[in-house]
Length: 173
Image (cartoon, rainbow, N blue to C red; front, side):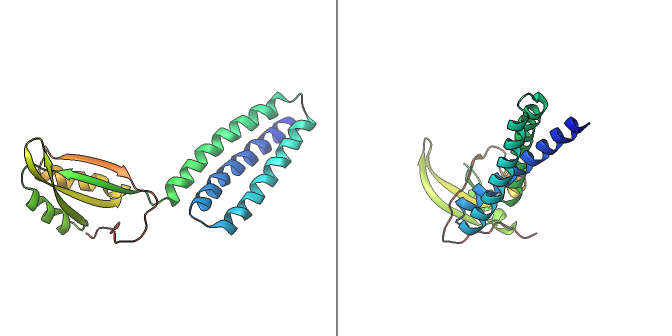
């Protein structure tokens, strides 16, 4: 019974340590140094406590399995944390060969910020619409665009390191 309890303790401790490690990395990238250092202290403390327990019981294959499983679970928890606290701001370029002016108005009326510019393509001049929004609004954006022009070309990518300017990531309505 003691073996099962220690294995469970190792599993949960490593899950927590790896999960908060992800949070620490996000805070480091965002420049929140003090908080990242504080979390790093707890992450390292948990890790060293667990590893010292495993070293005391070298023959415990269950401890090693619990550590590996806890690490994997911690990665999963870390991804959930990252998804929750990241803003996941996306940039979408939309090229419509028809109705581009109507599409621009439609998107603005739907609450999306739209920047438009002209370009040259295979078939001549065209208008490119750029919309910056949160990833949670992408499905709605695609629905609006496809409702106006089902053949519109759309390409989306995640934006990192945004500074300055204005972007509306919470469209109204």
